[in-house]
Length: 263
Image (cartoon, rainbow, N blue to C red; front, side, top):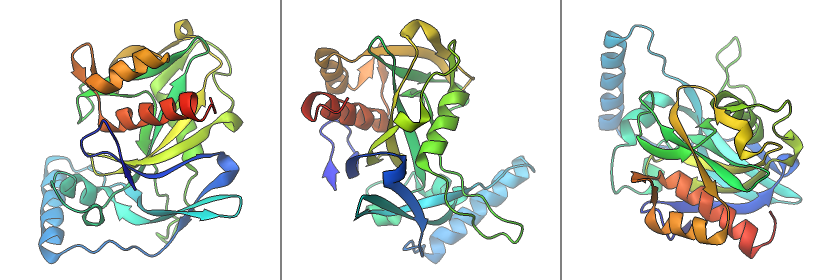
């Protein structure tokens, strides 16, 4: 694990350059152990939420356990978790990473053909105000008819879906699904682990826009090294702070573009 130079609670749990065939999710037994006190807190919060909203859904997610190097790629070990646990315990501060439910999410680093990264200003429907990537979300855990977990979804499939939901493109094929690459797994202050996915677009900065109401505005970040260093150093744009997952994604992008020459 390597700590970020920019995000206060940001750490890189895995770093690499992995294609769809080189990064697979696999279910394992959970290492997460909640105290009785925390179980009671989560149960109480869930009942209160259900009382306010009878349709409140406690989503089924995957918990990040670790990423293992294997011949030809990497295996991401994940275990079952529910959103209610994360929603309550993510606000706890100063705990070891093992304390948190730590669900798996994705953050898309979308780059236009004319050299901009897409950044969204999180709007009213987001519980974290500020700047985030355009194309982000949890890896949903789907269940069969008996309530058992189906095989985990690919981080790349989840990334494609989130990009298409949150971004509007005025070109027919905005990206090639086979060109998406995972750059790392980032743990941040929201206490979830996100896989940073590089998405080279077939669209220019004039051919992209907001795709839904999750963001209130779209900001284009130039990919020249000076602009990226300024953004990371300030941790903000236009007076709005950046989520640490965003900072981690930009840090990984910079390293792969200017250090490893992969982009």
